[in-house]
Length: 277
Image 1 (cartoon, one colour):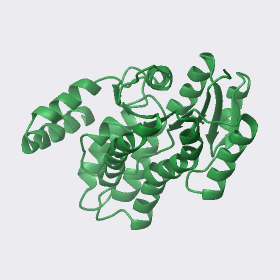
Image 2 (cartoon, one colour):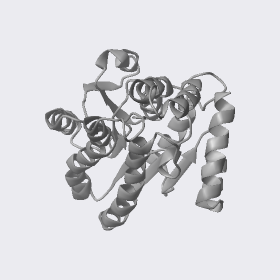
Image 3 (cartoon, one colour):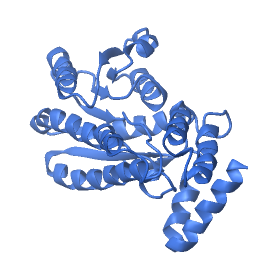
Image 4 (spheres, one colour):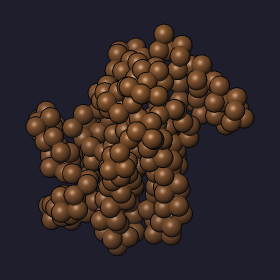
């Protein structure tokens, strides 16, 4: 049998970058796609195929999938990792930004899935791995757009899992906790730009401090740990439907499941203030 072929989106940094390395090191033929192609140069040295890929551009997505199919004739694993966090008070965030958040985090994921499914169905097997977040199960103030997209990914993945089961295609969800990457700093900058002044400024400053702190060693989980979960989802004979992974993931999800909404609201507010100092 030929090597399994994996296509990963958002592979220029963080989880996507490390997942590409991890899958390649375990014998998969890996295609890594992202907008910032120059950041993926180190992946080429590992034999990973690098693609220009923008998940908000249909032509770009078609071209990426088409190249893999032309060169390999198959895509066995799709890792939908591309995404970012848009934060700010709902009142202050322009609707165009809200739509872009959904375009990247939800519609890009859905379109990439549409493009690979015909081949997977014809083969009678395949894996769709959607990188969600523990933020698809809980919430924060000023995170309405981001959390809405991750809640959407959770529901979409669950429905997709059932509809693809008769075709031999597995659907798995990766639910990372805070991960050591540029994600938190970029999200904090966007938050302060939209809500750093005005009626939500106090909340914005607290949450921005929390988000910015996630890129400090020791405060978050290294992306290599998340990549291990991606590897298991891609290669296990019977993968789990969900992989909550990272520092505090299990505790946070347990609290959300057990606490009534208003008590959880109070806990979130208290924790954010304490972390922000």
